[in-house]
Length: 376
Image (cartoon, rainbow, N blue to C red; front, side, top):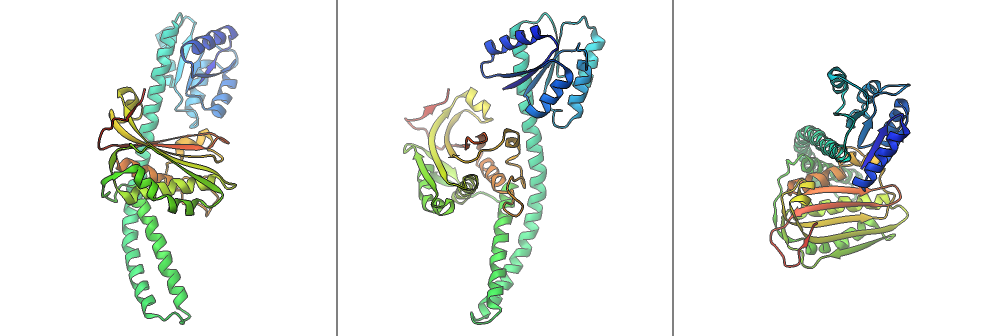
């Protein structure tokens, strides 16, 4: 949790620092003594919440709010105005009209301040999830329509080129060219399947499977994908229960995550795939946007270069890639996202530059187990 406090009073900043350290142990606090300095920090640091004073000499709180909300990079950061000034309702309305999310007037208790911060963080997360969902839905509709029509064209191309290839002897000079056409059509078909999976227009055919066994059976294929300079480790809970999954989709998901990890470790490293059986209580399930119950927790971790924090919200977006032009379609992780959602699960990612990346996937389990680990 990153909090930026903007106030020209060092005493007020020290009080806020003490309050946050006491009541929000996971909070990171940065301070600014002027509106301009606060704006620069907000643009570079991307805080989760801003605590803002109104009365400042160089740029008052009203102007600071206006600048924050007009900049796309900072417009969605919740702003809590905290002022000791004698303000009336017009000042409050002015601040809220400019985009402030809450208006607090001193004296204010530490519990009230912390409560407002927590509410703002929950609202911010909900808004981010809604924007992301709406964006994916819109792109998914477009991608699904294009993929469906393109797949029909590819069917004709593959059919006729395969017929010509069968009628052309290997010694014919056109045989190699026809083979290349057939191979290219197959790759294009695979791409359309990725688009259909992302848009959820490719229907899943689930069957009951023990995920640990499914993952282990895919080991040889994954080893060929990642190469000899990467060590592949499996940590499978033998008591993991069954789940209703589309085997081919789960294999596609694992393959894409393995390729993503391989590309993040050009000089070699460790790739670890683990499964566990876990029981989510109401609090844990709510945090993951799931219903309470039994889940299979699948993690895919690498020791690669990691992902900058500012890019994490974008990595599941279709066509977004950090790779060089021509070296990535930007569909791999968006397809993983689509597969997880089709299985009524959820996926998250933790990463930092130089610290590797861990993808955490929760899939509903089909049965209970005596060895379930209860999430606290």
